[in-house]
Image (tube, rainbow, N blue to C red; front, top):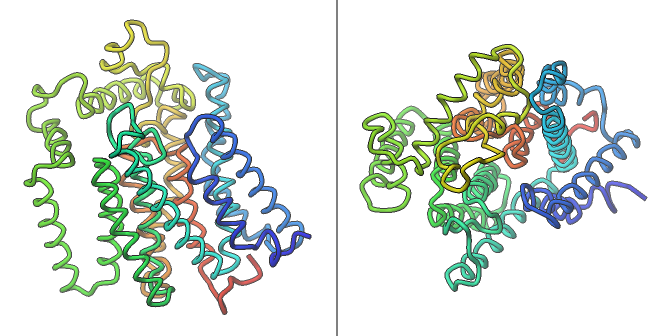
Length: 408
């Protein structure tokens, strides 16, 4: 009944489940329930494969443990958390998202054709949905609270980060496709870039440009690398000089270092600086245990919140994953969380000349370390998914005759 050929290993089933979890995370009901229901199904399918002997438990213990081990330390100090319920809730969410991501990616990696089918078609469907939504946005049928195009999400950064990550990963598998599929893939990357620019998401723009730049840089020789660096500088200068929403946001963030007094209390740059200072102050008071997972929202009340409510009950998180991990469980939690990522990244860099498939590992994990300065990602399904993707490509990158070794 549950054979790889007719159900769990069916490429259309995996595509459907992948869309259900990737396109709905962070959304309210009923999409919230779709996300978790699809996640539970994927975990169930993963365990069915283990039960049937198609997935070797022993070789999966190490990568899964490295991805989830960080939660153990905050769990030890659960009763010291400011809000125990909130603390446990976000530990459960994080572990669930890691497990769902692990299950889906492992099922995809069991068959190379399924993986390539998934990467191309999930991008085609995502870009198609986004273009339709964009047309409706221009017609005034679809609106957003902040006024910025955000696809099917309510937050432009969530939309842009997922768009950039999906198309960026596809780029690294370009050589695996035939000519027509490559043309489609390149077109998808182009449309992704356009959609991100329209959304005015600085975070999304940085991600897609970094993925494209790293794709060229890793594959290039010395002279080509110099040319790429020059091209990157020219591109950045062009973006800064031309009048556009992205350059405006960049200029405001530059004021953080050059003339912070010009920033307004309602601006993102001002509030991020405020959050960094306040978060660090809390960390210094709780360096070893933190204050509890996601309990930062009970302690950080940036100035802009008081424009909406004189006495807000809920604040916000630090908007920096490094600080957030310190707040979650202190310095040990920070180290436990990032050490496996840094280790796999360093080992992948060392082996680039031996295994070209590690290019995507280097790109995704390097990107993870960069974007974590600008967002809290430990419970962001999109970031978790692509981090797990990088890990599993590192540990299981030995394709043979279109499939991975059966001992996976």
